[in-house]
Image 1 (cartoon, rainbow, N blue to C red):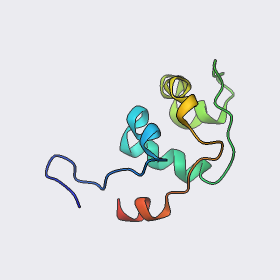
Image 2 (spheres, rainbow, N blue to C red):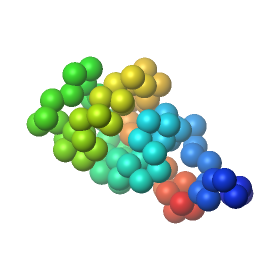
Image 3 (cartoon, rainbow, N blue to C red):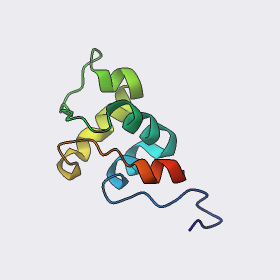
Length: 84
C-alpha cells in the first residue's frame, strides 16, 4: 500500500484536493476539525475565519484556488485517516 517515497496511504479522491494544498498534517487537522460539515471557503479569507484560525492565512487562501474541486461537505475520510 505504501511506497518508500510516500510513507502514508494515497489520499482518497475526496481528500486529494485538500492534501495537494495543505499537506498531510494540515489535511488531517482540517478534516478532524471540519469533517462532515458544510464549510464555506471564502474568496478572501479574513482573520476571524475559523479556517484561517486553524491553518493560517496562506493555507486558507490556497483552499480558495481549489474550492471548485471541493464537495459541499468536508469528507470524514475515516478509513484513510485510520490508515495514516
